[in-house]
Length: 484
Image (cartoon, rainbow, N blue to C red; front, side, top):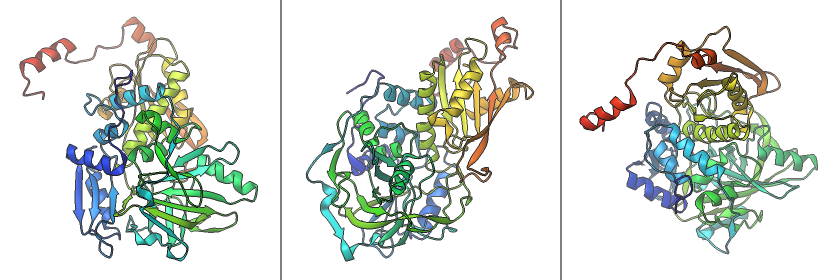
């Protein structure tokens, strides 16, 4: 089935169907015998850090000390092709920004579909309660050498319920293991899960949660995305073209994907805190100090036979989550630019070395004085770009926003430091930023790297040295082996 944007709904079903599809693409690496203690995370970083978006998904099995078949999966979405597969988009593209454009088009025309409740599913193959509860029955990794604990929730989706409106949010919040029955749940200020928890705690009530630790990568991607107050289940159903099948959790009553690999139900109670961290985070530093944070008392564990624990350790960029967060954020920024009436946006890309939305490039065709500055301010302040951004750059239509060499060329030849910089102070920061300011703020830099509008209008800016589109086409046709 094809949408108006020329995209197809995802054809795989569940994590295992996704793995089969990735295997057929030749992008799945199987590793046997790696330890949970820093080896899995180390292998992932070494395969990812210089991959330029081509690192494989890595399935670890035969983990020492655990039954064969108890597996971990790393690097789910560290290639553009796997992200396209997950979203149901064409696997081939000319420019990296093409996938953002297609994702943006899908989200713009999306009709959310609420999940469909079913009575049974593979996640009920094993139901663990009471004294049998032990999250360390899974090969939970210590991801980095300097981590002080094992973290079961990294490529996870934490389900919370708004106590006022009753809608379910899915967010990717890290979960440290304290013991077999107690795990952390670190949620940054301003995130929907944190807003939900603050509401419960203000009333002196506990908050129930479900931590999904092996779900469809589409749910993980949406959980990591800056989205409005609409359940990620509904958005996933809209992208898929059919509802997500869910069962009711025996403790929480929350919707749990019927084909989920591992689901942990529990509750977090006001006043119950433990020291949380440190954890090597997405900016590549141990900059978020260990502090007391609310934790989760585990009440039920559900899991499939031969479960797959999904993992996404953060490390020095380029890391395995920078691409997925960048694409998701770029799509939301593009949506905000459209919503604010910014015309002629041709591309948005968050560069992987500036993880998530730390370095955003916007490509547009200038139509009026101030067009570029308008785009800059909307992009840095909208929901998709507001959290922890740093650099926002706007370039002309002849510059590919996804090509960092071209963006830097524009910054070096079309940018005057005296007049083409704007600063935004006291913006929404992350404590993972080594330079965050007291109160959890940071400052942003906005770069107008477009040709000055009056020079563009008059045609007085120097002509670019380039090969014309006509000659490019002729050369590709004449020498196909050179440009395959």
